[in-house]
Image (tube, rainbow, N blue to C red):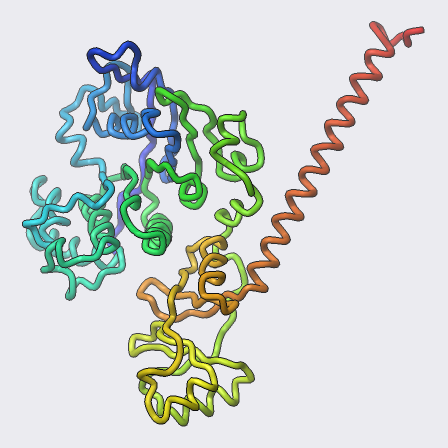
Amino acid sequence: MPETTHGATIELENLTKRYPGNPGPSVDNVNMEIKAGEIVIFVGPSGCGKSTTLKMINRLIEPTGGRIRINGEDVTDIDPVKLRRKVGYAIQSAGLFPHMTVAQNISLVPRMIGWPKARIGSRVEELLDLVGLDPAEFHGRYPRQLSGGQQQRVGVARALAADPPVLLMDEPFGAVDPITRDHLQDELIRLQHELHKTIVFVTHDFDEAIKLGDRIVVLRERSHIAQFDTPEAILTNPADDFVSGFVGAGAALKRLNLTRVRDVEITDYPTVTLDDPVQEIFNGLRSSGTNEILLLDRRRRPYKWLRRGDLMRARGSLARAGTLVSDTVTRDATLRDALEAVLTDNAGRVAVTGRRGEYEGVVDMETLMNSVHELLEADRLEATEGRHELEELRADRTHAEQEGPGGVTKA
């Protein structure tokens, strides 16, 4: 893959937005520094100004006051159209042009800034591959021929087309079903491992913020910053009751969003393919020492879970045998995603897949529960240490009060 442009720093200085007829500002005097190459999530209640703040970064909404600097350059006074060509932008429901093919949608900005045709064609193929869509299959399709998840992938590819250092994402996964949203989140994490862009991402979903963010900005009304910190710091030490309300109950379980499937043991599992004879599959199951075997399709993607009884009833055909694989996770999925998939499937395991959906292994319930217990134990130890520190501080304060000024013990 060609060398890509990595992320840029973003500085917001006294950023303000006022609308005529409103008594107060919609965004009031926001100051923030975002590091190059990090994912920062804006989260807050509806109407707090998070999307308005995001859109002022690429000046889709013009600021009333303040400054925006990208890599030290003040972009407040430059041509906003040129600015938007340098800042990727992805929105909910993808926002693709329905009369353009996938390739035409992706190549829009490169064509506008004068890239040669050969470079554009190469970039379109590269990006389709990057977001997990086969270029040969999707190049000439129209948006109406795509699923919601596929449209969102194309939307991300279009936002990345001109290789911008900054990517703004305004609730990009909010309009798809939960399983597709999980996979799109995993895809974004994988992409970021490769691209190292600066990503500013708006969501109303705190679990999504924990999963994706290097840091999270919890915003009050008018985009006042309640807390700007790492997900772990916000979960374990919320700044006040307002932030605690976003964290909600079960902070320890929410921390499962901080650990990835790649961080735990992925076990191998006996597998067979559709091309294997039924008798060979039966022999493989009998010799595996397990009660089931995983059937892979011709692209080595998980297809069905087969049990011994299924094979006995198959009578030479696998068409009606077994249970279809209902969900999978990638190595970039969180342990919470894996736990939900295991509980949904109700069979104690979930298959782990690669970027093309190919089988890589299995994560089981025992591994996941051990991780949950470790997190809970860590929280208990942290809480105990916190109480001990508080008791020591109180004892020191009491001792100081008893001694009085100059270390003289009071009568």
